Image (cartoon, helix red, strand yellow):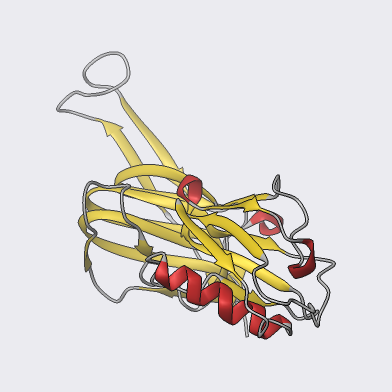
Length: 237
């Protein structure tokens, strides 16, 4: 199912009370609309009314999912009305590092080491002889991550049976960095590094954005304290 969206209206600058371009009586009218009468999208969703957001710290410190975008898999058009200044993180994604060439069973005798940092937290693992399968390796990595203070499990099983590592932070704060390599579990180089994604944009008031279909962001986050209204259109989730 596809949905049509029509954009129409005017921006009027100036008039009898001044504020025009040139003399005080000048007026400029800019029409709003698409190249054609309407645009067709696979999915359109939004907030039915204003939604209150209040993230911790200053705008840009902590992010949450942008309300009203759940049904849209890739956002091609975004309308945001905000009562205050907020920060949008466009194309947000966590850092993810995929291991390759791991050997399972590992034949570990116990005492083998592996270390990495995720989103700024260092994690060091000393494997036991029970870390033979990829899933057992993952379990021991995640146990070490919990001891390091992480509240999420960074290690996961890839579809090809190899071990993967991912963070939770997006943007520049998201980093997975190998500090002690272990080729047996699929991370042969201490130079391996993965970074999070996302471009931050500070906006206030009314914001209307269009993104190209072949590069539409799949995830948009928001940070700040405001009442916001959202309309998103694009590909179906």
